[in-house]
Image 1 (cartoon, rainbow, N blue to C red):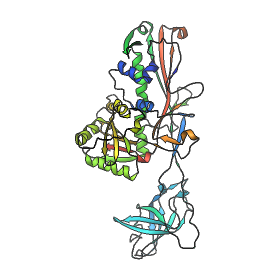
Image 2 (cartoon, rainbow, N blue to C red):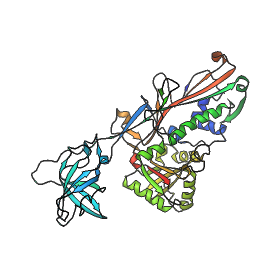
Image 3 (tube, rainbow, N blue to C red):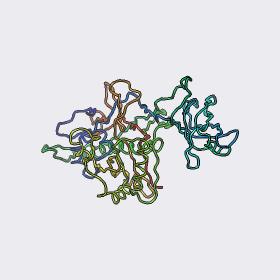
Image 4 (cartoon, helix red, strand yellow):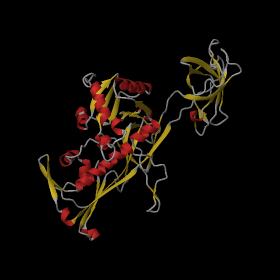
Length: 454
């Protein structure tokens, strides 16, 4: 994907946009920095999609089977064979409290004191928003579905697992199936480096594939920081809630994009652990992935402490043969995975592509004493899934990890670069400017896991 470039640049000069888009050249220049960032990985595996607006939406189909939590329960008697009336918690409702899981004639299951007890919905009353009620009869006369006392079912979960109706009766009311809406924002990332006249004449040379190039000293750090700013935002970013404005510039909105940490915190599965990560940690993770029907390939983004502990446990003890690297694109996908620093292993029936990220242990940001990130891990599915709300044939599928960026027929705001010199500013300086407008999209968030030390 070409960058948007303004200004006249000699062909032997390595412009800052080249730093951002050409990893082979950057590796020659940025010997101090590791290049395996998530931003790069998404770009070079074609996980990029244009968005027309600052806010971009995506839809996901939730669970096919509904469930709910009980707020309160009551019955005429609290003995076996007695029907019970339950009222759902407010969080069990959607659509401003008008919709909830389950319907008349559904079979349900509650786990009471560790024992599954099954019943049948005789009737549902959705007339009170955020407080729908159900009359449930036990399927067997010997079962006590009331729990034995007033409010005994409070806080328990009720699962609607099937349906049953009497012969010759009407069809039940319609099931509810509506995609869940998720959204994020693009953020504008700006970086500038100003070189005074004499300094701008300093240059360093680099040879790439036998060809000599030169670049201006100092410019490379600005280009690299621009790339890393995006990468850190995709990990640590918090989504704009509409309140942040620049009061020094007419209170214009300052939009920010949600990163992996905050999205998994808000929508993913939490997995706190104590002590040192080991096989029990992997077992717990695999159970969550199985419960959520996650795909066969997962990306595991590890902090250094978590990764070292995991390697101590699993190195040489798991199956490393016949790995599936299809998530890394066509051609030599395995080599591409290695090039970006991924180390893969198989546990149970899934392949984990783990990557220890130095930016989760970088002293000025995430590596200071008390920082949680060296002990964290983020697990995300690597897959393409059906888009339940496509706008055309081109987006009937979507990547579970994707970079969204702004573009129109006049400009590409993915990586935009321009220079200004004395002919414009009348100062003996050269400005090197970088600008990107990008955001992060993660799909199938119910299959993600945020692992953290407690």
